Figure 1 (cartoon, rainbow, N blue to C red):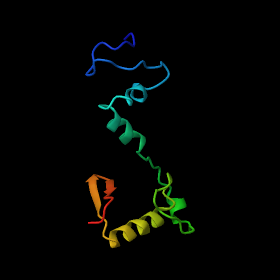
Figure 2 (figure 1 turned 90 degrees about the vertical axis):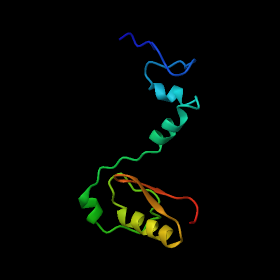
Figure 3 (figure 1 turned 120 degrees about the horizontal axis):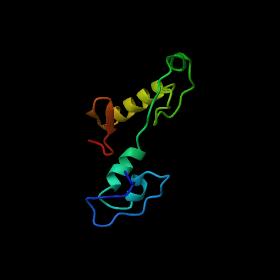
Figure 4 (figure 1 turned 90 degrees about the horizontal axis):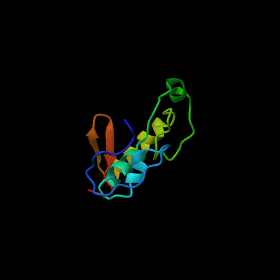
Amino acid sequence: MSGKLRAGSEPAFPVVAPDHLALVSASGLLVFRPVFDALTAMGFYNFNPKLIRELQKAQDGRLLKPAGENIASVYANNQRYKNAGYRILRMDKGVYALIGQQC
């Protein structure tokens, strides 16, 4: 492959630097923006059972840390939202979303 675009869904495509992913440049196009936003909002985890078992100080629990050491705080935070009338929806296996309005 020569690294040149042969065909595409968009009539004009931004220039892509050789050391960058095309999606970074394409994120300026409305059709690609939702994909870019979804990928940049993803979190990836490598749970460490040893850290999870250690006693932790209470945290706000809005975001799970990469090693999962604050999982109890995240669970408690989710329960607070649930008790306040918010809904937590299962989007896919292991993927959850918190509905931003009270139900």
